[in-house]
Image (cartoon, rainbow, N blue to C red; front, side, top):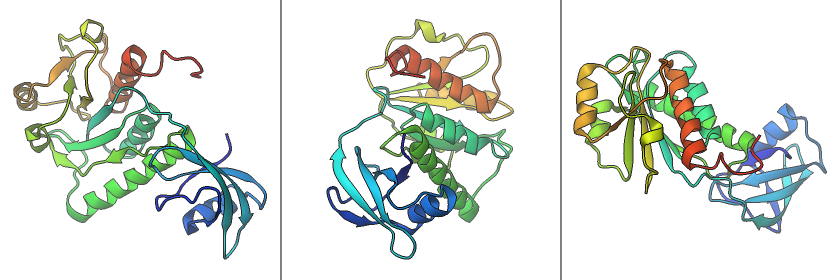
Length: 246
């Protein structure tokens, strides 16, 4: 694949288009691309444009071809509801969730979350995770950027009405994935923090009609659980059974 770049302000198919400064910097200074090199641009609205670098430096320019209606989205709309995890685990989770086809990531603050964020620190971290999602789309070929939602307390998230089915992973849960029926709409998959869900949180989830889900006999780390669930769901009902997957 040619290098791919996100241009959130839109594309100008079949014309010469100035490149955003950050795109030009990454192309020239990081990837060491040169005039004449071929790239791919996308704006998050679906589809992409093949392009050729016409100029770099102070006035970077690319010549765009027609918009190609290329879609690489899964037929399964999964939102990963991830309890805040410490260190760089959230970066890893967001990156891999995008690669695995999640349409959104909803961070939630759980009772046992080690990471505590609020106010400006929370907003900055969400903005950082959104950029992680953009980079993951550039790398994986996705043309629609998943939304990283603002951090919510778990109880506030559970109080919201959502379209589709909520599944909550918990060790020892009775609901095996193989016995569940294919969902007719979107899925929300809830993943606990390093210390797991508290009993009170599991009760709240049950009242909010979250269906318990187990993935085998072992207990996963928080940074593994959601990704394992996404992979399993994509294999069962999503786009992994299709041909051409590596």
